[in-house]
Image (tube, rainbow, N blue to C red; front, side, top):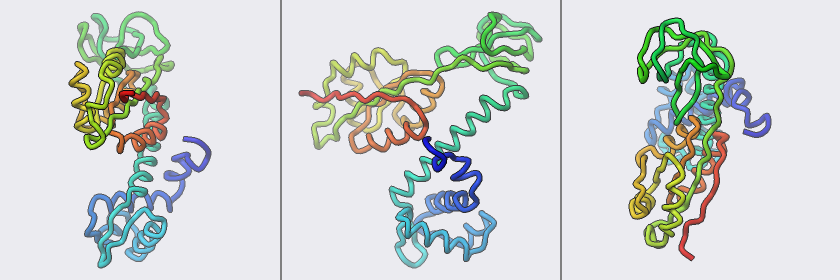
Length: 269
């Protein structure tokens, strides 16, 4: 997010108009192509006339395509707009959950050792998971109940900030099958890259097969984009092998989420 115009507080939370545009797009996407403006109006608490005006603006802005007779579809531009703002809101919500309400929350963690109720523990991230142990850390809290090592426990009265870094996302482009598919990938380079990251994912059959050939099957295939973003937010370095026509869109999602990424060219020379 860069600049005031990209701040979700400004574009969505503080602007009734932008909030309603966002909701209208989501409703259209959910019910397309047969969109009932009266139902949208009832869901959003506005008049059908207002819905009609919002849809007209969305069509004029190229975010919605009109098929006539009350039939509408969200365009690729509209989908990208929704995804960008949804990710901005998710980032803001994560900030609220992680940084603002931790004093009153009970956090779930894994006991790094045997702990007793009331023990003051240090809370830390390891392998993308939250742990609690007796060693003081930058964030500390109190154990809610007695637990054995490896048990899930509750930690309350958390103070300080959890020492945490977001993971680096490695992105490798794989051509579609008509351009060579997995056969055009430098498997040795892919194997070397996949060996140094804990999470490997694939988007597209060609990418999945390339990883299989490289001896490192994908940990994620279905929902891979979302899984990689979530894993990176939890501090895990990731590799996403992505077919070329999905490549640019995924980079935009990483940028919208504020994650650091590195692009790798694995094509045979």
